[in-house]
Image (cartoon, rainbow, N blue to C red; front, top):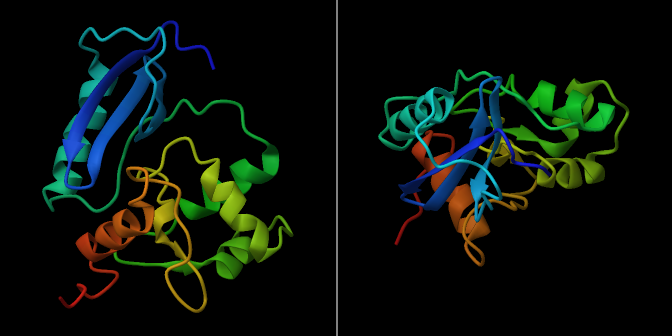
Length: 166
């Protein structure tokens, strides 16, 4: 992926350092361990908008994001599933099977996890809100080795899961 013409910055959160890659058309990528490539680290309006909404989210003042997106080219099925996922609001969860149904793609529930792993803007398109019918399910976001811990924290922060008892 070319990062020329894009801008990069990062935000240190309760669940690790999250990188932001954006340009004039909107947010391109967000995530843990994001490689800035040739992106500029000069201040950018779109990156600052994303960072501001991340601060609000992690500070408990925002549940959902309202950002312009400039997604990389995605397969039509992936785009349809991610579009359906945007309708799942903070405090809600959806099962893999329900998301498959909502997407109208005919994709089997077992394939939804792979599509979630291809999400270029986790948190903003909230793949952490997709859970298994019998539990938390998987998650590819977060610091290496802390993926499910990160998913649980995000869902607890949104009020979708009760806090874990110590």
